[in-house]
Image 1: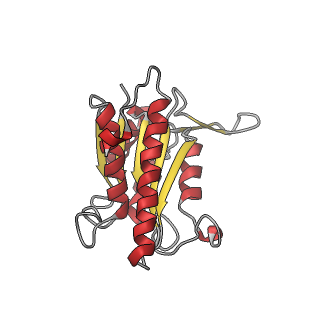
Image 2: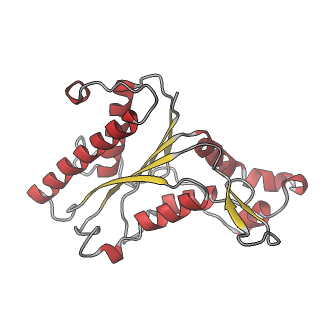
Length: 234
């Protein structure tokens, strides 16, 4: 079986195809999971909504606890790291991470940044040894291949071209996840959200087609894969 971790980071509730002010990334994420389950219904899916229920941000107590050796942590330290432990355990158990991450002011939403800060953690997802020659840091989530599917939405357009330098979502997420060992990253995104009309509608159609293609490509890469015709998975 393939274990999926589905993460939503939008502050908006509901999908944009069902609610007037719903989220495009929630729409794309649910589409991905539904299309996957149309072929592999037995694959477990764990869900985490860091847009509606963000993790507690890292503070001085968290840092103190995380950098204290596990064998000498006090009970309050273990308590402070309990949420981070749950998030790391979910991530480590996943083979495929599907993350809906809209662009807010050129970067990731605050809830998703808090998520990253909780999962990029010394001793759990990356190692550190100042005496290690060459590279004192190394990723720990390398026990098996994992894939991150990053589904985005943006108000403007051209973040892959004319204003690519202003896109601090995909590069930041790729860096953080690559640092802990997840380097296979696939992306799709909606643009023109602030324009609306046919520009947005066309971008949504393109993004949904890209999501479908990503699902089919990933399914086709599985051993012994047999994909249902796309018409049966609409």
